[in-house]
Image (cartoon, rainbow, N blue to C red; front, side, top):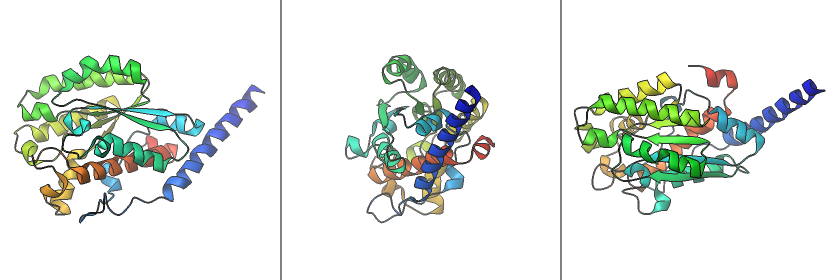
Length: 266
């Protein structure tokens, strides 16, 4: 009887995920981030998440609420956006709710202007206790690059932070620096991107390659910086945050709904 019950539970979970797959695949990425001049193009190969977001996947299968904590600095807080609702966490919440109707998804904005990895980890335990996140999105590295800080200590802090986040049982997605004039002019910008990617691989967590996505906007799609950045040429504007959220939401949806064997492939 116990074996029969477990088989029934597995079937129910599989059916629930399969239903979500159908809903997601029938909802293609909109043509543009906003009603503007430039299209927000979905590059699934570039932004594909390698890990399966297993915890969030289980919660969706069970129809349970999901809390996502967006940890970061000013580009998480929403500097450059016209309102808090135009920040990437707010946009992402709307995007995921649209893609997973019937699932209560909340994205909590835990961005603080000017912070570096050490500052974020200093407050992590407190807000993790309050939020009890199922997923942590960790945007990190930009301010260390802007201040020409050594990369070695940042690397150690990222690894420490990932260990603490995984200890909660949460899925983790690292987000690297933005591709913007004030970042790319710094000598360690590319090195920081590489360090973050290596940390994600070592710890078996996901990476959303914001730097590469924004580079593609500018160098491949020939979108001028002024179209996706605020006048400070550092933080994103409403279009940039909206497109970032759409790409991240699409990458998360794909990871959550792809067949399990494929989700585990590296």
